[in-house]
Length: 327
Image: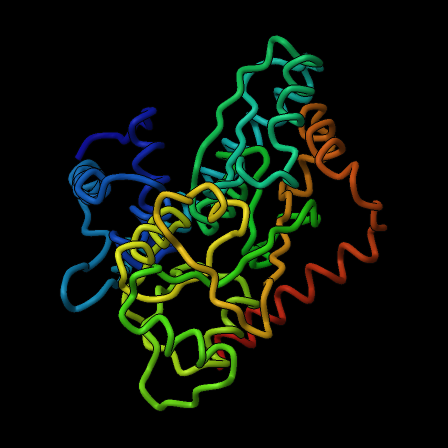
């Protein structure tokens, strides 16, 4: 093998490889990256051919790095961080607010009247007309990973994990309630169970969310629920609820838009569930003008907390995450 010279394609494939390692598998990495499973697998194979080493073992036996793969991963992480830091530094040094403003949001943020997303983007567009905006719809884990790796500048998410070196600030909230199809054969029985009037041991079919806030997790533990399906977005949850697979939790503002689907709210003592949404960015990016303006506008409706409150919140999230993993 001759001298190795890094290309743009190599950098892209190394970033995909680090995502595979950090998500412990190709399938999970493809989901986190919002990419095609075949494309991620092909990129990994091409990188192995290019480097001339086997990076990992993957398949039915699970995912495992080879010694060479571990070494390449450590170097790739360092390279990726240095490249991203260089891009950020150049943008700050130039003092010109131009280039890309990359935002990641989770699904159905737009329909939440409390989000102020459109107004915030409009303010940025008016203040910095030379800025090119990239708006991406991603899963909560994908947003945090992209922020950490500087592939996003700012993110809006509802399930933060306290990932270092990110900063999170609560920006707005969202009401969630329980819904069922009007024609579900067990509707009356299920409504009685949530109201505390029916203590039948028969499990209630439930549409489980792959990524969920602690308040939803607590609700699931309070009733005799049996997952009938797993979904990764609000729209897919609404689809299966309407199709009669079982009950599920939806944002109230989103359910109000689905009158043609004949969804019925299931009353429960715990509802409405209040889910906080957070604006997140890297701690070393807070001086970026576009981020500062966007963040300031989204937070206009709430009092600014001091840095002590922010650090306490981040610590609380980390403790909560550790507790959930141990449970």
